[in-house]
Image (cartoon, rainbow, N blue to C red; front, side):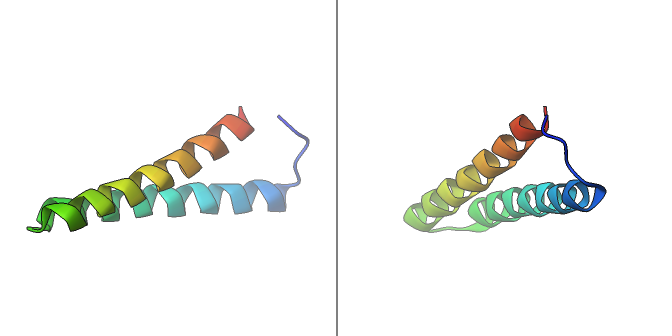
Length: 61
């Protein structure tokens, strides 16, 4: 892990929380959606946010 300041770590923690929230929201919206095409698009967006989350976690490890 890179040497990060406490401010940088705090910003990364905030971003991790935001990405996690976005994944949950988009997945929930996809489950509630009756249009299959829109539900698939919402799942795709959730996957992108999951990838962002995972990239941040890998950076911290």
